[in-house]
Image (tube, rainbow, N blue to C red; front, side, top):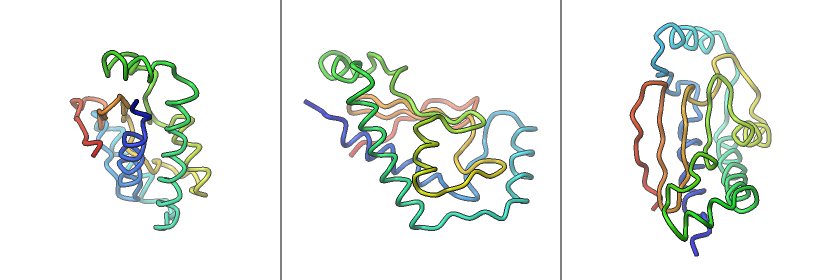
Length: 147
């Protein structure tokens, strides 16, 4: 049975790769994008390469825990259709990261800052053999590789 290891690793790498000071701010709301860029330009906070790696490691573990412990939907999706229960297997940043992403930020010692570190208005669904991400409020769903 697929235990979610590939999916968790690919998802964690995607978020870690978007964990930058100049990360994507597309939200579909021009005013919010301007405010986010302004807030970021005033911030003196930085993220080190070590913190990015720690974030990825903690996030991968947290995703695996989510898939194994919190959602029987993973086993059901593996047995039937990958999309079954996908609403329960999501990571997201509205104006603030969800608890799983925030936990990984905290574990890596990455402090909050105005404008955030991760792309705003972004949702990722984690399904067996499939990752989908919507980067920004009005964006289309994009399929990501789990290889």
